[in-house]
Length: 526
Image 1 (cartoon, one colour):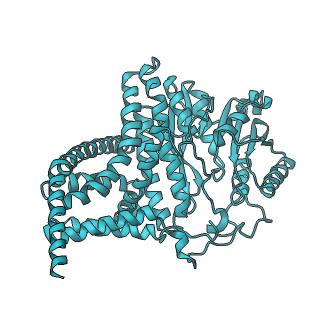
Image 2: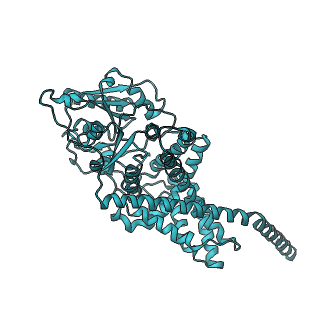
Image 3: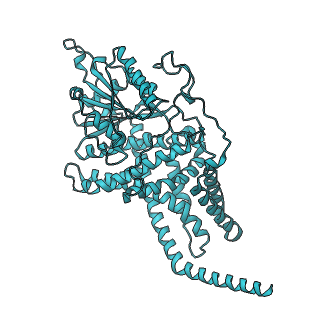
C-alpha cells in the first residue's frame, strides 16, 4: 500500500512539473496574446457602440426625422389620371410550410391601404407539405375573389431557398409593370398605411433604393428568451439602423427596394442585396415610426438555427465581397471603411469572437494561471459600458440586463462557430432551416382586423411549458462549457479569490441552465 502511495505521489509530482513547464513556455505566452487581442477588440466594440449611440441620440434630440432629410409628400389620386398617380407595387411573400402564420401575413398584405389596381401580391410558396400548399392556395383564391390582385406561385425545387424563390418570382411577365418591390417574410404583418408612408421616399428621391421599417414583436412577452431577443433587436433597429441611415445612408436589412437582383449565394439574401445596392451609390432610409409586426423564435432550438444563419451568412458574404468593396469606384473611401470595418469586421466578426473567446475562455483560464492578470478596466469597466450602451435600446427591460448578458455570452458559442463556418466556407455554410413559428398560439383571439370570423380558434394549441422527457432537451456543448466555468470559479474561490468566481458561477450556471433545456417555450415534437 505504501508503495502504491509513493508511486502515485511520484506520478503527481511529474505531472505538476510537466504542467508548470507547459504553463510557462506555452500557456502563459498564448494567454497574454489572447488577452491583448481581446482587449483591443473590446475597445473597438466600445468605440463603435459609443459612436452609433451618439449619432442616434443626436438624431433624437434635434428630431431629424427622415421626412426632414429627404423629400416626402403624401400620395393622392390625380384629378385626371386617378389611381395612376400611385406607382405599381409588387409585394413578395416567400413561404415554406407556414401553416401557423400564412393567414396573418397574406391578410395583412391584402389589407394595405393602397389602390387595389396598383398593387400585385405575389405569394411564393416553396411548401413541401401538400396540405399546407392547398391551404395557402385556398387563402389566395379567397382574397382574389374579393378583388385583390394576388398570385400564387410555386416552383418544382427549393434551389437557393428564399432568395431563389424571390429571384424566380421576378421572372414573371406581370412583374415588368411594377415600379417598386416590397418584401415581407412569412410572419410579417405590416401596418395598413405601410406603403403610404414608405413609397413616397422612393418616388420623390431618385437616389433612394431602400426603405426599412422597424420590427415590432407580437410575442416579446412569451418567455424570458423572447424578452432578451427583443432587447438585442430593439438596439439593432433603434440605435444601429438609425445611425447607419443618418450617417452613411446604409444599413444591412431590406424592406422595400428598387435596386433589384436577388442572389442566392449566401443565406442572407437581403444583406447581399443591400450591400450590392450600396456599392452602386444608392441610399437607404430607416423609418422607425413605421412598424411591421413579426414573431420571435420562442424555442431555443429554433433560435439556435436562426442565429446560425444570421451569423454564418454575413461572415460568408464578407469573405465573398471584401475585394469587391475594396475595388469599388462608385462610393467614397469613408463608406468603404464603414462597410469593411464597422459593418462587417466589427459587427459580424469581432463581436462574436471577443464575446466567446474573452468572456468564456480567456477569463476562466486566467484564473488557473497565476502569472497572468487582466487589467480591471478591460474586464469590468469597458464591458459594463458596452452592456449599458446596448441595454438602453429597450429601457423597459433594463432590469433584465444581467440575464441578457449571460444569455448573449452563451449564444456567442454558436455565433462564433457559425461565423467561422462562413469565413471558411465549410460545413453548414449554406444550411437553411426555416425558423419555427407558433402563429396564433401566443395571441388572444380576434386581435387582428384582417382575421376573418372563420379563424376563431388558434391554428395550433397553446404550447406547454413542461415536458416529460428531459433528455430530449440536452445541449452538451453548453453543459461542458458550464462545468468548465464552474470548475474555474471553484478554483478561484478556493485559492486566488480574485472575485472572478462571482461571474464564473453566474455564467457557468447560465450555460448549464440552457444546456439542460430550461429556456424558451417547449413545443412537443419540435
